Length: 411
Ligand code: NAD
Image 1 (cartoon, rainbow, N blue to C red):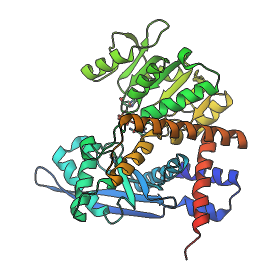
Image 2: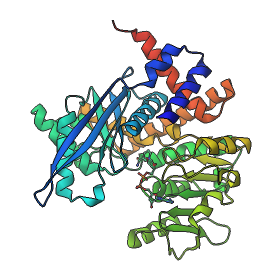
Image 3: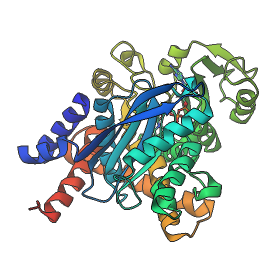
Image 4: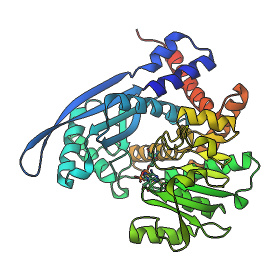
């Protein structure tokens, strides 16, 4: 939360706002901590802890994921909720920011136990959530099945099916076409725009992608489809680099990952040390795995001219400063990985209207919103002479503060 507050303080200073505005935005509007008694499959009872934090709802209902992870704590959930407020405002979707989590290691529980945890958590937070109040989505450790259980539990309480209460649902239950690939597509829209901004032709550019999960895999595929040579990719088990001067055959690599569960051992490339991927000699680096991977110890060796943050928080504040000194352009997470929240918004719109769009419609509207946000952030950065992260945060803070001012303070 300290990092999130420091970013807010910098934005408030840049915009010339008063202390009261900072204080209004530095604390969540509403938060709840709940106990979740769970009957385990062996008949014993365990009590878990869950949170839902609504950081801000001046621009619309809260929006943000539900995380199932052993590291969940209230402070982390508060910070994540604040970043969701900025992400939604930056992409101009009519939401505030929220986040939720249960402190649990989902790998240690059966599907039946996870269903019971999800249903009890949903029931405990149900007075706070709803299509007009706060709309959860999947995050680390949760998926479309979790969202189906949440939707069902909420609907049982309401007495009728409420598709708009969560997003990231299965397609057969009111999910949106294009949702699964939305974050990766968004990363690539922004990456291509940023390469062109640097005077680099994507078809002659090279890239390295860290992480080959929901975000990294699609990013590698869509970059390759746009003509970028994807020189190296990694996952938690290791990394692989292309032979010769061309890019990896990403389609063949995906087939290898489907068959073996990892990028390692891919016959179309040579092994590379995972950490070396971050300092590979490429134009574009996309960290799309976990937080804090670019730090004081390695940021000075990054050779890419452009870093596009597919993951949340992959660059520490110290690394940010080092990269800026060396002229590396960093596109921040709240812009680069916002494709998922945009298509979540589309899913909610479709569910509330009970009218579903084609995949082409979803993708065209996603592309419009991502490129328009990129242009707005770039303009803000040039206007104030600040990096893209400060530009993105300040633009978002400006929109939320404006909503506060226009609504006025009650009473
Ligand atoms: P995921 O679990 O599907 O994939 C994570 C990938 O990273 C896996 O391939 C894993 O092997 C790899 N990995 C883990 N540790 C690594 C390491 N030390 N080095 C290299 N690779 C490593 O997760 P995801 O949904 O793709 O999320 C990745 C990041 O993107 C997270 O920071 C997440 O918060 C963020 N994000 C995801 C979405 C989304 O729509 N899925 C949206 C916004 C942001």
